[in-house]
Length: 228
Image (cartoon, rainbow, N blue to C red; front, side, top):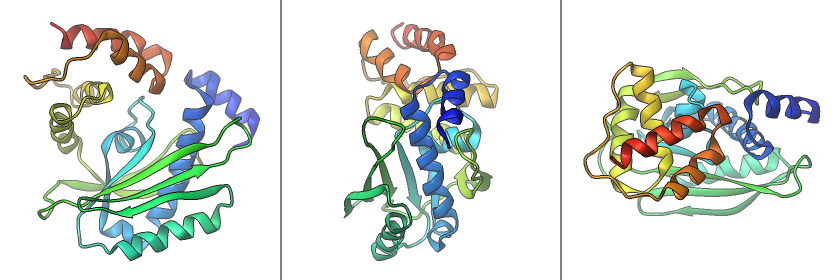
């Protein structure tokens, strides 16, 4: 996008340039991914999928994928190398094949910002065969002209995964995402009984980075709910 388009989106979405430009990069990556053979064996999930497939207002900082059929690390590396070759402002900072994940980290140079920004790609490798209800979903963003089709878990599946995430890690974004899913499914928000403890400052600071200002009252409401 050009600078005028960026300024317009900042005004419309009430979010920082960094978040919009990172989302533009996410969409570029996902469009390339949708056109690669890997996309038939790997699904798109997590908070970024919730935003780009289901229109959640929370922006994100990485892309989470999950293997649904056997995938070779060499195929992933070949695809990542292709991304770097096609986009001269992208550089690969790290790529690893770990026990439970495949991981890549890009640094992206953007002339509209005074600094580079990073984009992390993480592919989860489940120990057992994945049994998720999924469907091909249109992935779209106001920051991009691309509209790729990718396999994405249903909202019900994402709800279950978010409930597990809330108990396994301390991230305020999981609480907000579960609230959004509950709204989308038209059900009451039910939080797990075992929840991490957050200070008001850390809870609000994490979420406000990723949310348009109109959602700040929801952040306050959610903090009150988790501290009852």
